[in-house]
Amino acid sequence: MAASIRGLSRALAASPCPAWRSTHSEARSHLKPEYDAVVIGAGHNGLVAAAYLQKLGVNTAVFERRHIVGGAAVTEEIISGFKFSRASYLLSLLRPQIYTDLELKKHGLRLHLRNPYSFTPMLEEGPASKVPRSLLLGTNMAENQKQIAQFSQKDAQAFPKYEEFMNRLALAIDPLLDAPPVDTAAFQQGSLVQRLKSLSTLKPLLQAGRILGGQLPQYYQVLTAPITRVLDQWFESEPLKATLATDAVIGAMTSPHTPGSGYVLLHHVMGGLEGVHGAWGYVEGGMGALSNAIASSATAHGASIFTEKTVAKVQVGSGGRVQGVVLQDGTEVRSKVVLSNASPQITFLKLAPQEWLPEEFVGRISQLDTSSPVTKINVAVDRLPSFLAAPNAPSGQPLPHHQCSIHLNCEDTLLLHEAFEDAMDGLPSRRPMIELCIPSALDPTLAPPGCHVISLFTQYTPYLLAGGKIWDEQERNAYADKVFDCIEAYAPGFKGSVVGRDVLTPPDLERIFGLPGGNIFHGAMSLSQLYFARPVPLHSSYRCPLQGLYLCGSGAHPGGGVMGAAGRNAAHVAFGDLKGM
Image (cartoon, rainbow, N blue to C red; front, side):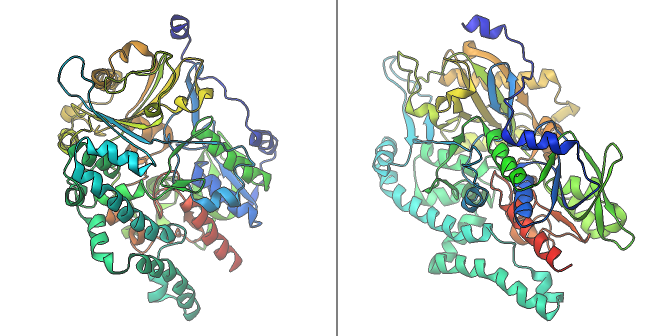
């Protein structure tokens, strides 16, 4: 069977038609000249914004330049018979009220929760008969302590307290995600009514303060210090520290030694699924099924979604207020407000007329840090990888560790730092940090029988290579081969199982998905670009200097990840402004 699979073409196959497309096809031939609101981009945040606006009675249209909705949350059949979550690949952060408000289960969303969730195999030399150690973590604390005790009894005892500490911080951050940041401009310059209204934005901050209580100094350190300093205070064993540190640097051009890396870790532990705090899972059918469910909810309420319709510019009237958009084919679509799910750079430097934006604002947007270390590699295989530290069962069926995020080259925080240093020199990491996930271990609908899809989230790869080199096919393949060699060391036979692969370097992620610099968060999740300062100071309320234009994507508060909060929050801000018009 493997030989016949290898003979299949790499053609992009059509996916089954989701329910929203019948509405979409009908709507496409009835593009209206005017809507109450237009959303630029059908990424998950744009779809969430459209669904909420339409639920609130605001007639909304969404324009997407690609042939499918979802932005980076898409399912694509790159290799015939294998369905990949081509960019984003795991779910945890989507806000619980969005599940409920948009009735996503009713619209087809199905989840596969992972437990255990983290597996770090070691490369250890020893007698041929000795299996290398590994670290397997899940929801059972007693089992976690047994696993950690292989490396340190002291760390096994400390781990429950560490989890409690981090969960409390995540609980304090939680209220801040579902509301705009404090509107400092309204406090300073607004009318009395505006100042009174802005007092409500203080409530989430007060809630966070109450939860943290007298431990605020300790939590402040987590947000500002290098994650290595935080973890060194809790633990002594490198495999545990390095495994935890991966969540502090994933998707970020930072080292575990970089100040502020702790917040990125927090961003990866603050979610939950189906009432299970901190749970991560796979979407049945891939991440595109989530986007399709949101789109289905939006169209069920009356929103119109148009694919292969690129917005060329935002239209502004003589009074300096947004009047709608102009599509690439010249079609003008009028609207009272425009919400952009595109990145801040695309929104304000390419789509918005520059003459209507203050020079200082444009300068700040152009200086945003969008550096990204990520190369995503999607792999089709004809059998599961068999790790030296956890050999496969004779039946070939998935074992518990196959459903995890499998961390390779992550036995020591020094390895992570060295991989980062390579990228700072303009070189792809010699030993890349690899997060390997096998969603088909829980969702067999993604691959032919006996076969699997593998997601490799790897770093560090610079956007610009040293010596004037570019990411051409040769450089892509050289890096992918290096990644495969690393996996082969942990799981001999892996390379022989590969049916095909799809390599997406930072420039590829930028070109295909509109991610600036390839950055999955639309901009670095550093403290200088969060909360009050996302995307820039004084413009963190989803509004911008151009009246009627709102930012609703990951470049707005609270940032990246498949969360939906930016879309939901922006929709409510825009709706409030519409009511006041």
